[in-house]
Length: 466
Image 1 (cartoon, rainbow, N blue to C red):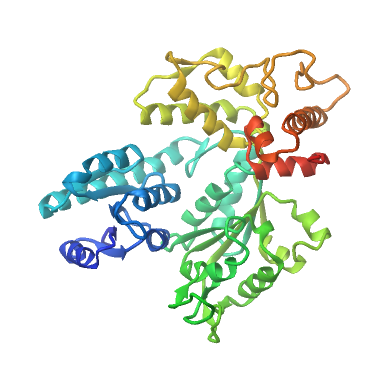
Image 2 (cartoon, rainbow, N blue to C red):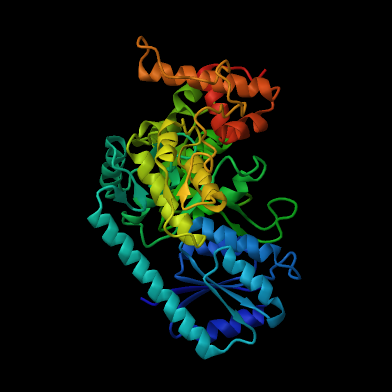
């Protein structure tokens, strides 16, 4: 099969010229703006992307182009993106390289130079895939890009291997930041749908007024502003995998339509009458307690049983023991290489602080702390100060005071590990709420976690934000 190439440029004539120039060697897809570019990338998963930074609605600056670059790298951090720029835009192209682009070419394009660079990108992409496959085979603690030697993570890996062979829906449960989308990607890559697109939808990120048209698409004239037909994300996933993240936040009316799709494998676009058959593997994830949501009538029981044929539970980072330093060292190696600081290592005190920290934000929080430390460290040794994990400092107050309710020297002998953890969580959350006068955003930031994770802790511990 020919390698895939995505060309992103708002000039139709340039898109056509480049497409015809490389069509004999590459399977080419084109896009004119950020939205269509991200959709095409999700669907095609090309080896290489050619990106012009000047995209609508603001083609005279680089905002949309840089946002497109960031969006693609979010979907695949190893994506090879070549920036196409004019001589006067060289500074912007260099800035894009710093943001993760692979290389850049100046206009007017030299076809020979372009073909050589495309060939090299495809070659490097294949080497990276082969290396990842080799690592997976040689290291039992590395699986589809995920690290985990603990019993809990090894059980997750075994579950992925088993469920990937079938086509049944899988519900992935876990706190925010535990890697639910990575697990979904791993299932997709090992399934019979691996050659199709992987379409991820965050049900919590799309406004309720737009989510139906985003999921199911719409026909021209379906509502004011529907000037053309639009294919929805579910239809885009045909032949591949549909990943419904934060399914617990899906509005009840949409739960009914989704249930019908799961039962019949058919959808109707908004404003349409024709039923469209869509064959796709469905995976879902949430950090919400669906048992509680079912009891409160916020989530349909029939939809739950359709989605939860197989349930895969991800452990929080704080319960993964020996995995914590393993993941930390992997992040340190990666971010050190990206920032030209190879050879960095953790001090013994930093490792101890990492092991003591509660990691309410899970792997995402650990990644954030280490990325910061790599930039801020003055020495070749990362310290607990670089990580902002001083053992005597309360994350909620920033104070080192033995009288502070966050100061905790360990559980009493009469407490179980679970009771001791909840005791500490309750104190830290309560202090953060009090210090920030009920401001959830500020309290969550002080604890180094996201707002959804903070709300989850409030519900779990029965604490009022007031």
